[in-house]
Amino acid sequence: MDKAQLESSYTSEKERFISELTEFLAFKSISTDPGYEADCRRCAEWLKNHLSQIGLKAELRETIGKPVVYAEREASPGHPTVLIYGHYDVQPVDPLGEWHSDPFAAEVRAGRMYGRGAQDNKGQLWYVFKALETLIKAGALKCGVRVLIEGEEESSQSIGLTKSLPAWKPGLKSDVLMVCDTGAMRPGVPCITMGLRGIVYLEFRLGGLRYDFHSGALGGVVKNPATELARLIATLHNKDGSIAVKGFYDGVPAPNKQDLALAEASLPSEAALKEMLGVEPLGGEAGHGIAERRGFRPTIELNGLTAGYQGPGSKTIIPASATAKITSRLVAGQDPERCLKLILDHLKSNAPAGLTLEIAGQGVGGPAITLSSASPLIQFARGILDQIGDAPTQFTWEGGSIPVVTELCAASGAEPLLVGFGLEEDRIHAPNESFSLDQWRLGYRYAGLLLSKLSEYKGKA
Image 1 (cartoon, helix red, strand yellow):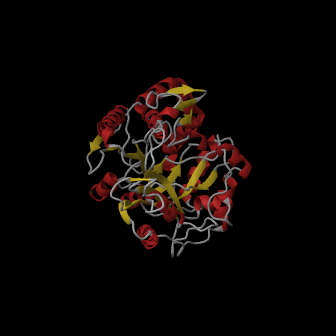
Image 2 (cartoon, one colour; image 1 turned 60 degrees about the horizontal axis):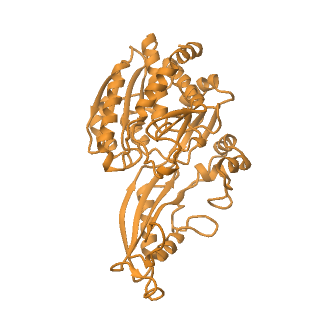
Image 3 (spheres, one colour; image 1 turned 180 degrees about the vertical axis):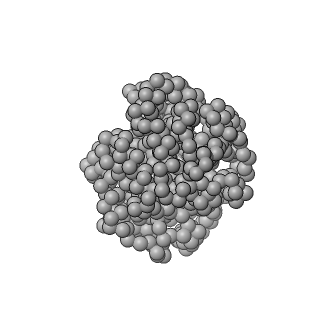
């Protein structure tokens, strides 16, 4: 199927595609909150049924966590197989008061679909599924398709899926792993993600007071856990923004000059980035450019901080405890287990005397992924993307993580291809998440062309 045929299909089916996506977005599939367990299952059931309706053999697979939607369609003889990965779970909607519309009653405004999951990842999955449907109806799908859509990417490092992969491995053999959970740097310009950082997370608490003390009676007499926690967090970084954890940078390579040049070419200027974000892009390590800090250097970031009274007005206390949540993004050359231990050792050695340090939660989400721009698959995808974009395809090394990708490649034997059409302005993980319908249309074209022409790929297939 060519670009003109896909465009004709999009034009005639656009309203139905949007209506179905709105239905998909209505499910409150917030995986991190146990209160939405039933919503997650209903979403998975609905998706399974929809994939069956468009011509795939679909089922719900139980795991130790949330159910996984699996679907397949066998390849015509001599044709390759693509494994499509994504997730149906979404981030919490807090703070709800900042949304301009109901996050689970999606609506289109000014050419954008607004709602939780509109981009991450339901919206991006939807253009893949609609492209699949179009090809199946036209008899233009020759490659085999396997689909794995999980419900814990946003909450528990895909634990249900990853623990199930060894048992499912015999049926997952594929040539290409297609992931559309990434983004582009500019509207209308396709982008191939060449790297993802690894991730570890940690939740820790400083306590030791029997209860919340009166800040007048005991202020200046006892240590304040909230103040001491702030000091402890500050020890993780040096004044120049570098990480102060001993041994943390061991094994971190300097980026390849060609890769760094490609990454820099894809990024907006500092001035444009400032306008987009509303802040100066000056965080991170001194002496490294934005592209390097974003994709080639590790980070430790504070994600949440809780202590004391949070209600209206004032309550004069010294809180009995204070809690912090951090994540660390890792790069090539770093072992996640080792890095987590280094952070733990640092916190323990710098914890204040007289208070107790409790590790409330920890986890490893997988190592960094780095691809080669010379890969035949990357060049094949580039040729397709160059047909649909307003400018030549860009390459980026993402700062984010999709922990399960490494394990999916190992289980399936597939080579990863990470192409998505999200933009920074989509505000994923924040109130008023949205997805440009123009970007959705680009994604539909890409998925349709890739899946219809994959048999021309002369790599592993």
